[in-house]
Image 1 (cartoon, rainbow, N blue to C red):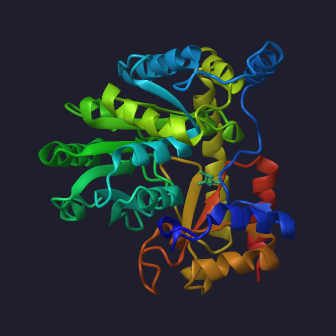
Image 2 (image 1 turned 180 degrees about the horizontal axis):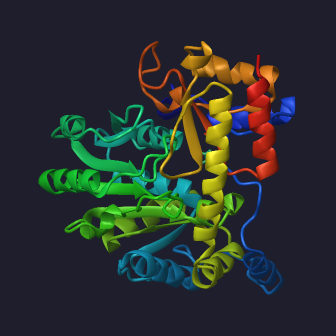
Length: 383
Ligand code: GLN
């Protein structure tokens, strides 16, 4: 195995979804919905398949989708981007993250990243030769500590990798927190890379794209996808938007990764963005009910979960059930209860006893009601 991949554990999502299939458990682990996105969008993909959208799409993405992404940024946030120079379509947001880091980070560059972090961030910072500088969001509120953020910046820092709404904690960064990041970015001339895939899934709080703060549009690369907003996680259609030179760097790396992908899916996602602009809000309303159902169920099972403001995940400490180690808990849970969840400790640098996330477990609530009902009922009966 190449040095660049050493010390990086296999992704937890593969392990836990395989465990769910093997044990017939209710999968409250990997974040994918049980219900697909809008039928009209699927019909559009079928039409595209049948009508010749089966060869390579242009490297930066089909024009229809780049234009639709630009309109989406304008409609929701008042952000103006040129669809030809400031939008690139990627193979899911995961490839947008990978391309951004490979396209921008030089060996030794430091990247400030929120901890707990989505696992691909760490893998890709390392593959790019960068150095991660985690800033920990701590229970119960998982707020950003601005002093810790400032302390994480050194003369070698060049990037802040944000994620809001935040996976796995469900925190949504406030305008004040984002302003602190923005101030720091301007002061130290940092580029902000922000993963906003859960942008439409917030409960009672506003999602603020950091690119909308004064002075930030010119130093922010914003990443998102159709996976979470439109319940097409398997389509792997994502995008990066921002200043032309940052988007060009994403494309410079991306052309050597997948070159291009999803030719028939890209026009369908354009239709989703343009013609189903209200789908994400409806999905969010339905997720909110399911969030509360999961929180009640976890509570009844003796687990007091932290209330997420966004995403489709809720985090609980398993200490109240007498467990110190969330990994041990999650590995035993399929046998004990027929449920799979994600141990949040894999999203922390320090996994020692008493450290950050050792006792935390993430449960997904983007599942059909019946599945969630069954999952929480099983949790309640766990011995
Ligand atoms: N983003 C989803 C999650 O956090 C799925 C991740 C994956 O399977 N790589 O659960």
